[in-house]
Amino acid sequence: MDEVFKALADASRRRLLDRLNSRNGQTLRELCDGLDMARQSVSKHLAVLETAGLVTSVRQGREKLHYLDAAPINAIADRWISCYDRERAGALADLKTALEQEPMETSAFVYTTYIRTTPERLWQALTDPAFTRRYWGVALESDWRAGSAMTWRQEGVTIADPGQVVLESEPGRRLSYTWHTFTPEFAQAVGLSEEVLAKLAAEGRSKVTFDLEPHGDTVKLTVVHDGFDPGSTVREMVGQGWPELLSSLKTLLETGAPLAAEAAQAGA
Image (tube, rainbow, N blue to C red):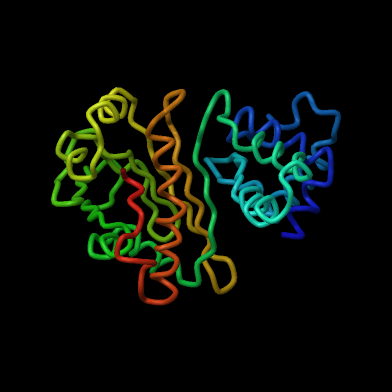
């Protein structure tokens, strides 16, 4: 938490967070545009923000994209605003609100966690149907080659669609696939209303990417779920589900048991 306060204490770093809040997933060059700062200075500020967990970087080809991660801000709000008078904590609350506002051009969900495991074991946890069922409640079936189809089995419902495909597959390093189709059978199984189903079905298909990077005796797992329509209902739902789901994955790999039998359903 000290690193978060230190990172937020600098006005230049707050400006960088504001820029990512307005448009997430920017390169270093894009972040430098319009700033009265040398490229090296921006790079150093980003390193501080990344160390504090406020920014996550993901390689895409030769470039590195930077994403805002408001989870540390949420932790500060939960820890401090709930304990002290809210009026006196107004400035911090305003900062939390600003960082959580829906970005204007993109609303990618980004989450980074460190899991005490190996890349091989984590890859198995992401691709083995028996494994995903334990912490997710979903069996993901595919041969996990780029371009291959995926089948989702959840709550007794089988979801198969030509649009459900593996986009990228580098075992132990990177996995990307399109999100599942929202069918009437799925909606009934998880208790979604007809109104919500109509909204979900009307949206374009999103995608999720998992980046695995060895980090000492842990693996740094970065999840980027993006491709949402403006004001996306899918974005709102997966934003609530992913944190608990990934916590359950981490707990399962580190202790042998998921958080609970009723682990969150990020696919809802």
